[in-house]
Image 1 (cartoon, one colour):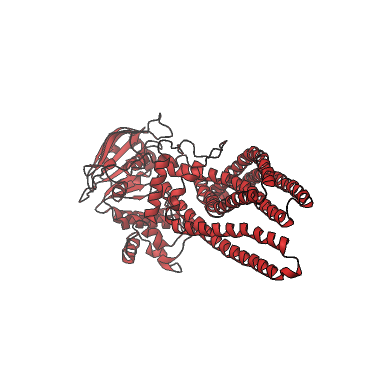
Image 2 (cartoon, rainbow, N blue to C red):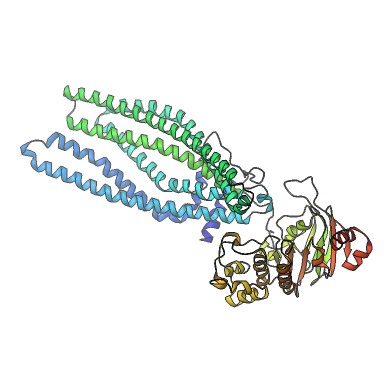
Length: 612
């Protein structure tokens, strides 16, 4: 599966090279005036492994169309020769032929349905995997502006739209195209005069459809975009439902979602109304044309210019042609919607991270000791390039050193961590671990050297065991158990119904803040990286939980280089060195005792906290 996904991504990248949209600056989909059917062509690489099913579906489709086109031949002979006592044998033969053709049509149609729907399901699963893989590879600059609900909508609603296109819609389009062409050929053979009348009528039908289809397309795309907005809003509010409830904002959220859903409904209703109006035009024009041709043919039968059987045959072919043309117009509407969905998915697939993998990567340092060097680093976030966050900043951290980073909010503390992990690249300067520049290593190799315990531990809707093993998926059960023991997870896990294998709900809602932090520490221990980053790991805990977590952190830091961001100075008094940041610059550094005696920025912070 991974090989297929990657090859499809590569093919897509070649198709879109040189014309890639920037989702970071504008994550919202744009409604275009014309459907970009090339977006659908860019999805074709995902069909690469379905050639066999596609071939069988095409054979079944051709057989079904041939059986359908053969039925009027039998009907003609029944009408012309079958209603006399002498032709009873012919009646039996012709009706038997019709039954056989119908059976062939039924079997081939069912096979076609199975093959095309299987293709649709497989293609959409590959597209979803590829889009999710691409989203997981994007850097912080993308997620600074992208909305998670919007991305989820693309993975669900848009891919579902493509499923019907690569499955049923494509099959229906091909079937009706074959029927239309075949019926026109047979009409010409049956009666050139009547066929000429039908062929003259076709442009009179198609041209109004094309004109009306533009309005349908715009409304359909607007409906999809509005639904994505509603899905994005719902995802955000559901993800933070405790906050919403805690603020008493349920009614306001419900009202806003109701407005969003109503807008989506109105947009969808407008699109449906347009399509319904278009369908009524199609039905009227098509069947009015058929009626006129039938009336002309009836007069020809009366004048003995053609037989009733030949007229019946022609009418059936005309109905097939009219039906094929009508369904092709409906499929065209579906394809315009699918083109919009493919464009939005293509935008995600074409988005390249600003943080690039090195073309010729250096291997990670071996053995990795954890020495870190920041040299003349300058940095500004991509969303605010004119606002300097760091720099120029130079800092040497020895292997095994415990370094605390303090300073006011906005001083650039967390940005140091972001740069070390290459969630962003520095504007200038360099960062190295054990002498190897971080931008020279593969991202996976770099991040394998680092474990992080964030301020707000992210817990997934899974078991405690799997939440810990997320740090090292190949870890054995014994390794996970040992990490849980060192992080003091076992005391509370053993009280749960299934111990470490207890499911703990989305975001760990069934656990306390201290329990979630201990799971995050267990991850860091299991990762067994030479560098440990602690970002306000105990700031939101009460005294009892802080003591338990601090003990777990002490065990986690043993033998590792540790960088600790802290606002509570009491938690970092025993650090080997304290770095004080202000406005992205190092203004002081030293031990707690040295900095307290210096009377500078750290001393002011210490006096506020220790004398409060």
